[in-house]
Length: 502
Image (cartoon, rainbow, N blue to C red; front, top):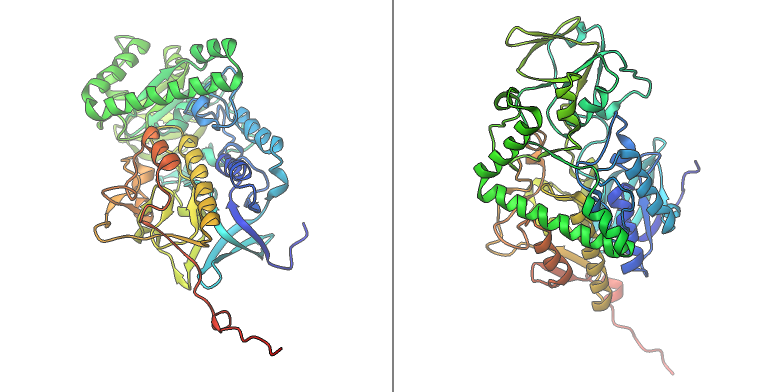
């Protein structure tokens, strides 16, 4: 790779070439075609999450009619899609729209400095251990919310004594063969419920070991209504109808979970009892201590987890770990689970804006001291947006809205001749609510690093697609909280011009 020797300038720098970053590039091309842009990707390939994770069975936990882009129909039959299919979808989107030529791989963004005098960011990336720099008028962070370096790995007593293999899903070895092996998967989240039935297909046995249960719901991998619509309508029409159907059903279910949590809880548990039979201990293994949607629900397609349990290929143990042993895991209850492979599906390490350092006019930005503006920008930080999806619905629903809004903002600045857009708190705009209202461990470990949200718009997040659609697509860009300005004139530019003598 040849390193650049001069600072390059673009109207927009997009950081991250995953699902969000490729979508941002497409929106920018369509909605703000006069803007030049570059996509800086720290890894050697695009795809983000869907290229990074390689564990068995990797798949979405949202349907692809809402996880897919608003502009590109999902055409495959499986609505709950596997990772390689989603990666192919992202790659196809980039290729179809000539986005590939804008991507710079191996560019890990480390620092961004805003200079009000020039209304520009200087973005420093590391390439092969050496710094390269770009300047831009607007910086769009699409780097996700977790660290790509490593997953969350709690220390387990006796781990060094274990004679088998310990692996975290984020760092899955390509040559790990689990066929005929006894496997223990520690965890009860989306990754665990994906791994267990997939590994159980060839393993001697798979045990899902959890400290506490998670709500698990099953749905068909294919959407019969979507397939019917595909046969009756053009692809985009069928896609839009299915998308809205799933959005509305999700919103209704979420609202019911918030307003009638006990009723929804009993519905979910009733479904689990129906799948596993009257003799299974659902109270111990599938009944959480919290209400539905206080944490994200786990989705299993076509009953795969329940089927693996019913056939005896997999089992669930709810207990606390005392220590690892040479041959497995000793539990607080005294039970020992034998294992050849232990998978620590213990979660992610959250990271604010890719872990880069941000400065505004020489002052380091502490994002935990800022308020989140419309869920995408930050009080006191000019010309910076980030793409962050929903916690109670598909990621891309909010990412698409965010990208479209950023383009509205850029176009407004062009029309009005303004170069700087800064969300500014007004009196009464203070707030100390967590940005992520979730009780999940991976959120609670890191939520103090993230911005806060206020009590009212535009500092309050709706977590509601319909409301966000109205606000971000049709609401005012110049809403009073967003302050537009231009750089102060320099001494040279402010000096009056003297007419030459005739």
